[in-house]
Length: 347
Image (tube, rainbow, N blue to C red; front, side):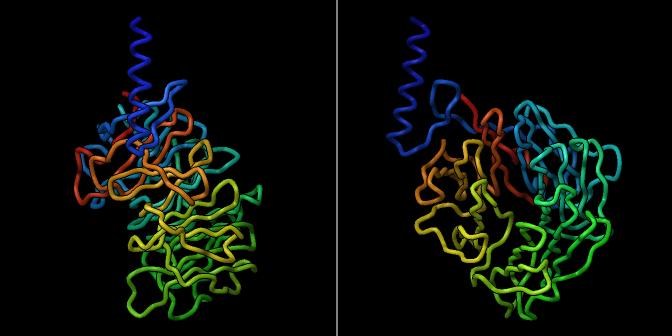
């Protein structure tokens, strides 16, 4: 009787969630609402850098989630945020402000890390136990890797808040060549590159540079020449989904862009509530958020449904653990914050 009563309560919670327009979380055979719980705990150590928590990234196929803390490196949790362990304590230290982590689709223990206000980028081949600096560049935002090449030789790096600054490596990051000067002189900051293959690149031009144009540029010859394919100016971490579609958020909360033809053309998703870049969930749905609400889409962004209750703060980004299907959200702060990371879990 107790089991039947408990199940009935859970099913009632699910029905109430659907009535309220929320997309409940699925745990096993029971669907129900979760609650946002503070899991900041010891992440980042005793002191943080200026920007606090800068990113969260879920390791593919794992319960592990990685947090990047300004000037304090990367921290990992495998127990839902109950405890965080600093990564990269052997090898070269990560002292920048982390911006992006790119996991190798063939081996998630291999990943690249980029960031600003310090040396960048870095790569690890042992799941974050140690990191190797690639080249001698500093102060960057996004990094991209050519995964069509088994040797991972081609990389792109966009320097932080700098126009025409895009950098190319053809030897796995040992050396870098500036190719951003091949973009138009009046283009804006080129910060977040995408590599589709060794010859096909995309780069945004967006930022606060006065009088500079916004847009997306595409190259089919390895960065020798560029064509403008959009006058929208996206920024931040783009998503190249498993079905090949590309999603990118316009700066200043201007809306979500999508390309279905490898970046040749772009359109803005009408009526999309999401105000930040999106992630792809293990079941191939999209997830994104407004200031204080997570949304999911099962139809490539045509329709969005609320997921879970309202967030306890204005979120900067979200992540989802692939194995446990637990959602996390974080916020940027200018000081150490006792509630910078929250987790949506079963009640």
